[in-house]
Image 1 (tube, rainbow, N blue to C red):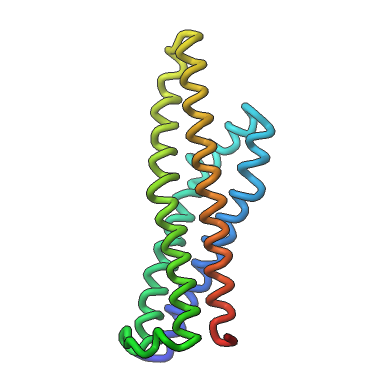
Image 2 (image 1 turned 45 degrees about the vertical axis):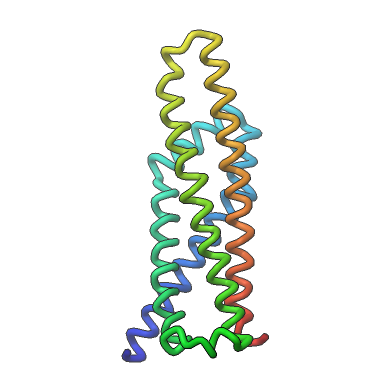
Length: 172
């Protein structure tokens, strides 16, 4: 592989990772808690962020770019997944960081995405709901939002650990 292609893949990995980690931390630590405190205005803002600004789509694209470019870089660094490489400190640190990133991505796919889809389905029913049904729908939505927030915090923490492990891999 040419040095230019390697450099391009490395750049994609770093820039994608910056966006993925940054957007995850921003959502988990700042936007979600603020939107929750703001009530209906916060919900409108978050809906606009998701539907109109398409932040989840952009974050998922960055995640996929990061994971795919990372797999190529991992393969190259390990000499084609040579078993002896994994026993080095550098290999162990990159492996640990990779596992954390994959776990964070899995949390998004397994928890956040289905919860977001369920919330959308429940919100569609809200205008036709009577008072009792609306209260039940709001309760279900709140539970799903809480679940999403927990998964988002876990994913953000895993991504920070992943980025730290990869940044420090050469120095352990």
